[in-house]
Image (tube, rainbow, N blue to C red; front, side, top):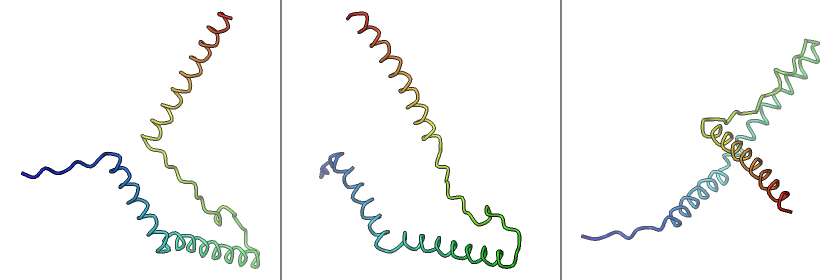
Length: 108
């Protein structure tokens, strides 16, 4: 029976980071991000042309129809949990630091 040598956990983490790096490098090298930016520019140019045509024809213009809402809500149960956890830690640290300061003031 041949025993496999266990890989150290730090090496596993480094390997995972390396794989992510390679994936992002390939995505960057292949032009994926540039293509997405180019598509946004084309959409914007089309909106500008449509806007100019409506101004030339004297139509009523609503600016909201030409502006894209790019805000994305990334909140999920884990981010909400993180927010509530950090808020709780902030309250605890604030109250405990006030108590410690009061104790130090009474001693000196």
